[in-house]
Every structure is written in C-alpha cells, then in structure tokens.
Length: 299
Image (tube, one colour):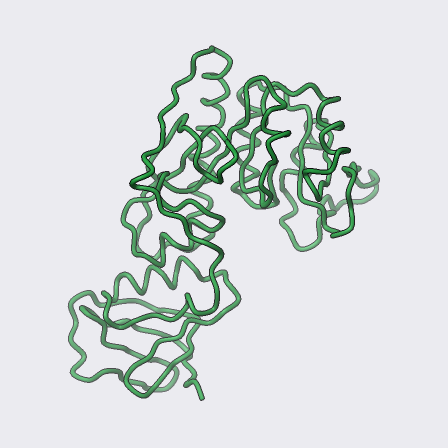
C-alpha cells in the first residue's frame, strides 16, 4: 500500500527483489466517491505512456506492479466492507505499507497472519505523523533515518522491526532526502520480509517518553526566525523546497517572502540586520549570514 513517489516505489522494488510474492498493490483513489476497490488496467500496447496517474512520475508503484504482473487497486474508504472482502480473497500473509495516506482500521490490521508493517522516514519514536521529513528539516535535526515497524491502531507507534540512520548533507533538497530514505527503506523492506519468513522476528517497543508527533504543516510553519543559525535556516529552506508556500523571514519592521536560498556563511557578521542589492538578499542570523535570491517585501 503506497502512493506514487520514490518512498513507495523503491520499497515495493525491495519487496519484489527479496522474492516476496506480492499479491496486490493498493493506491488511494483519485475520486472521493469511490467505495469498492477499483482495479486499474495497463494502457493499450500502442500507448507509449504508462503514466496513467496524471501529475505523477512515469515510473511509480502502479507501473512497477504492472511490469511484474501484480494487480493494482484504487481504494478510498478502507472501512468499507468491500475492501475487507476484496483483501480476504487475496489471502495475504502480510500487509506492507510505505507512504500511504490512510489509517488502516483494526479489521485490516488483523487480516494477515504476519500482521502489517510500515516504513516511516524518521528514527521512531521521534517524528511520528504524516510529514516527518519536513519537520526534521524545520527543527534542524542532525540525525535522520528510516524505521520499519509493526503497525497497530496508533499511527507510527508499533514495535520496531528494523531501523537505520540516513545522513543528510548540508543543502540536500527534500526530493534528494526522500530518495536516500527510499533507498534505505527498500533494503529494510527486503530484510524485514526475510526476518518475518524466518519466524520470531525482532520486536523493539518504542519508548513513549521519547515520542514526538507532528501534524501536516501549515503556512505559519514557513516563517523563519533569525534567532537560529544560518545553517539551520539554509537546510530547512533546501529541504522544504517542494512545498507551495514561500518562506517568510522577519527582520525588524521588514518581512521578506523568499523561495530560493543561495548559500550560508556560518560565522559571518554582516554589520547590519540585512543587505539587499538587486535580486540578492543577505540576512544576519544567529550566528551566520543567509544568502537569498529574488526576495519580495511583504506588504
């Protein structure tokens, strides 16, 4: 069960490469009114484009499933009786999830004999929730990673099966971070299935005292304070560069809306709160200076 980005594509490839017999792939329905699962069929041979999911990469979990003769279904309400009956007919041993936007009801979690596992791009129990990469960039985390965990009724709270760190270099973009997590997640997914096949897989309970949860970001979360290091602001802007909202930086009575950062000078002292020349803006942070492009003052 997944979506159309690399964080679903590569883990599915990891499952297939591990020798797992994938009986179906489920993706969220594009229409809000669908109830029963709808099977997606490949395009006609004369159609060179496999991108039937408009707006998503040509190679995604749908096309990968078709290439491996795996049926693909769109689902909307997972609690609908037809979803449960459809999955029952597949006789799954395991449900594997990566980047799927719906919470699985107890009836689905109890269906496969080996349970359900989920790939989450953070070092759980830190950063539970729907957009962990965004919040790790926003909070200036220096340690990132991927966790494969058993699923229960609480989002991202089940026992850990496997976990690995994924280092992010300064200036990495959100897409690059997702790709690195997807590569690591593909390996974890393949290893996890082999452990489950062998019986008595490791299960590490999450420490609830260390748990954090973050919701979907809002526009207010793109306001950047100059009281933080320029390095942290630079990495946040690079990591959250795929979101539709501009970043907003307040400097005294001025508020700048910016979308692109050029670089940062970790120990530089500007001598003034900001310096604007042409389409280049420099802002004093604490410490360091952030260099930006094409700023526009907020009115």
